[in-house]
Length: 209
Image (tube, rainbow, N blue to C red; front, side, top):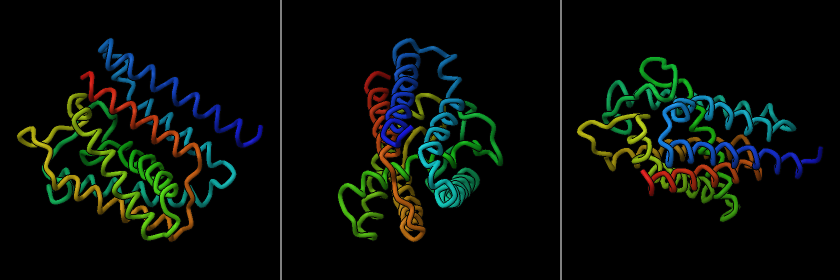
C-alpha cells in the first residue's frame, strides 16, 4: 500500500467516525455516542500514529514529551488555577489521574501536530511557523471550549471561560511547537486533514448545540 492510498484510507475512517459522532451527539443527542468519546479519541490517536508508521520513533518521542507537557499543565490548572484558570473535569473523557483525564495529553498531541501542519502551509521559517501553530491551536480551542462545556468534558468556575485560558493555550502550544521544530518533526498530510475534520466537527456542534 503506497502512502497516498494509506492516507486516503485514514482520512476516510476519520471522516466516517466524525460524521457518526456529529449525528449521534449533535442531532440525535444520543448518550451512548457521547459516552464513546474516549474510544473516539483513542481511535483518532491511533490513526495519527499509523500515519507516521514509517517514521514512528522520532514522532513518538515528540508525542510523548508533548503529552507530558499537556498533562502536567492540565494537572496544574485543575489543582491550582494558575494555568488556564479555575476548572474541573467531568467523567465524559474517561479515567483520570490526579483529576485529569489520561487522554487529555493525547489531545494536545493531535491538536498541535495539526496546527503545525496548518502553519507549515503558511511559513517555512521555524519561529514564524511555531508562532502560527500556537495561534491556530488557540483558535481551535476557542471554537471547542463552549462545546466541551456543554458536553460535560469540563466546567469552568462560575460558568465563565476566562481569556487567561487562551493565553495559556497559546504559550503551551508555542512550547510544544518549538519542541517539534527543534526535534525536526514534520506534519504529514493526515495530521492536517485530521485537524480540519475535527475543527469542522466542533464548528458544527457549536452551531447546533
